[in-house]
Amino acid sequence: MLLKNRSNGGKLSTHTGWPLEITAMIKDILFAAFIIICLFIGHQCKAQTYAQHGMVVSDNSVASQVGIDILKKGGNAIDATVATAFALAVTYPQAGNIGGGGFLVFMDSGGEVTTVDFREKAPLLASPDMFLDQEGSLIKGSNHTGLKSAGVPGTVAGLYLAHKKYGSMPWKDLVQPAVDLAENGIILSWTLAEHAKKIEQHSDSEFLKNYFKNGDGELTRHGDIWVQQELANTLKLIRDNGKDGFYKGYVAEEIALFMKENGGIITTEDLEKYTAIERRPIMGTYKGFEVYSMPPPSSGGVVLIEMLNLMEQANLDSIEFNSTIYVHLVAETMRRSFADRAEHLGDPDFNIEIPLDKLTSKEFAAVRYKNIDLTKASVSDSSKFGQLYDGTNTTHFSIIDEDGNAVSLTYTLEQSYGSELGVPKLGFIFNNEMGDFNPQPGHTNNGGLIGTNPNIIQPEKRMLSSMTPTIVAKDGKPYLIIGSPGGRTIINTVFQTILNVLEYNMQIDKAIEVMKIHHQWLPDKLVYEEDLMSPDTREALILMGHSLVSRKNLGQLMGISCDQENKIYIGAADSSSPDGAAIGY
Ligand code: GLY
Image 1 (tube, rainbow, N blue to C red):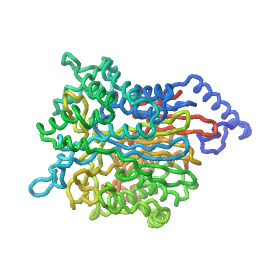
Image 2 (cartoon, rainbow, N blue to C red):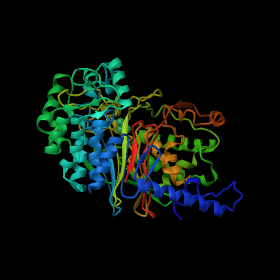
Image 3 (cartoon, helix red, strand yellow):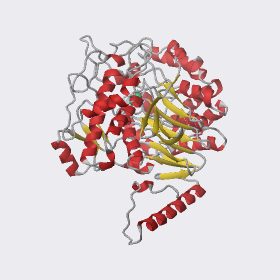
Image 4 (cartoon, helix red, strand yellow):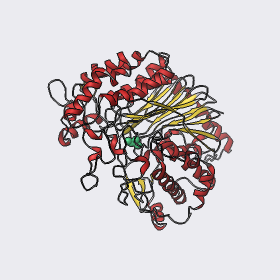
């Protein structure tokens, strides 16, 4: 039977008085009819989208459509990825980018998995104390502000590498849609129009204040056409010259000149030396499913696998979803895995010993799990490590094509609109990713700083990330393609969404929407989504020793689940993403 009872966890119940089996059969028939109608129409919506041939789920419906158009032209998932990523650089400028970096995980139709690391690098002139005052203390905010907060961008190199190795369509055809969007303009969404107004009132950045202005110097308003001619010109150089259009020649020289004249440190040498790196994925298993995610310099994959291994030790069959004991177990799992993150993880190319095999092993998880007290919260040891919460604005998209090639990509400028700076004649925004390094070597405090060695600034080093683009597979075929923005909360958002689907049999849209929590070792706080945790659960958790903090929202997941048996792709964009959309055909 089609998609048998995934939505209620396989537990049959009825209030009709009919035998359970008949009620279940009627439900299945209605559900199958619904899917057939959806497939016939081939549509997009804010809830779930069903499709047979391909699916793109991103934070922006125009960019999702660009990806789908490429798939319809016969492009593969990597082709659609390149086109979608460049389109997001135009339509979702708060995080979509060519001035930042990220990671992608790619599973081909034969079940082979690889990853591309296009994380930003510290410039050659960077140093461990570059954000410190004369007393050796961090100059507050300096690692996230100004041109020195920009890492050497990686996005164009990463997309180019992925295209060269795994793409099928001409590069030019994949960049052209973004050129058209920038040159012809897009209709400014409500969200971007609100950003534009806030930037005009509050930002110190002249670059960003002019960013949303049209030809006559007026702020573009909701519903107006917003043209980005300078960005279009830069994209044309990338379209015509590939990676070199960004890392060499006019664009590179203009970046370096601007940096030199305005206190930045990125040079033409930095840009010329930048390379994206293909890396073996981090791989784990969860109850018969294979889980592929991003290895260091992202912490995402390692922490995700460690947490899934820990949860495999728990008997979740007898634990109700989002009950007090469930939330406690999840929080304690996060606490332990984030402590390991702080101690061990950083750029693997900088001679640090990362015990990857140990951290992702079932044996290690068994030992870690044993010291969870089911009745009370542990205490994070603030004398060891500490980390600030980071409110980042990253973006994720998930893609699958007709042949079953799948891509999970997360990229970012770090904070919303990154450093808020850019070269006016180039039209794109620089990241402020240097803020992801540990800024004050050796200095760790309970309030939030972390100063452990693996993630100290060094020239050409990649800063530790939490981005967690992930593909869960069953028997070598994609089952879930997911990821999220949200700084350190990313890993926990992806983790809980996987549990929601694999353990609690939720459909992808529900798995994305239900309450998430976050714990990151230090500060020792259990963060929950306000309005989604019941008062009695909150009270019970406090009695167990947890310190609770509420947040409006955690994560902004873009996910696809795949019913391989019936060859149906089901896409869902988090409803917290105002312009996001799952589009299939
Ligand atoms: N900038 C957010 C991250 O890489 O985790």
